[in-house]
Image: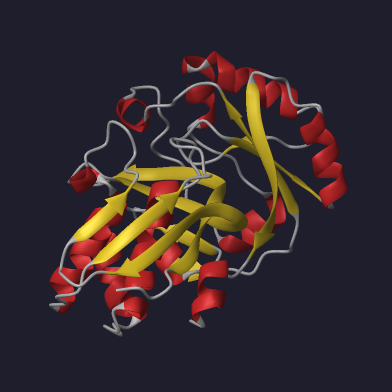
Length: 281
């Protein structure tokens, strides 16, 4: 098939705060967070195949294709719809792996929405959200496509419109183990729940931040450096840190001073996913 590929974005997110409010009997942690979408992310290119195979081009080294969330999402959609059409998928990565920016989850969501469009399976978003929950706790917010308040394990979502701002994201030269954090005895697991109104009025922090500072000195150094210019926070359970700025120029000026041991980028916060804008959802 020689049709032009469908090219779609997979936007990143930052967690404006992250509280652990309890632990369920099945071992999962109950949380509260605000997922803020940003206009920076990966890109996926989808092309139809004449058979039912899912072919991921340029797979991530060390990660078998069947374990990649993009492939898993495509196969899950095939199974849910009975679709016999396959796809060639090219993934162009920009979101740092393991950074707490939701890269893999966003890639999976873009795959669900993109192939649902390309294959003409026309599943409603509610059905895609059910598939998304089987793939990972952060996938549903990207399928929903809005900055949102999250509860439960992240799947209970309420749309929230936040004032637009610019965010500087920096990545220390280290990898943070999510499994290590969740199993650590020093993790705070009993934060009292807060309301959206209280967060908007007073703000909140990330329960993982003290532990990550202790276990990963590079993250501690990054928070200290970024904290000279603005309120710096950890996002999610990864290594990336962020700070919000009123305008792009200010954020770019700080980025220019970033120590060489860090990487970083500046992006705008958005309330609606650019993916959904393109697909008209």
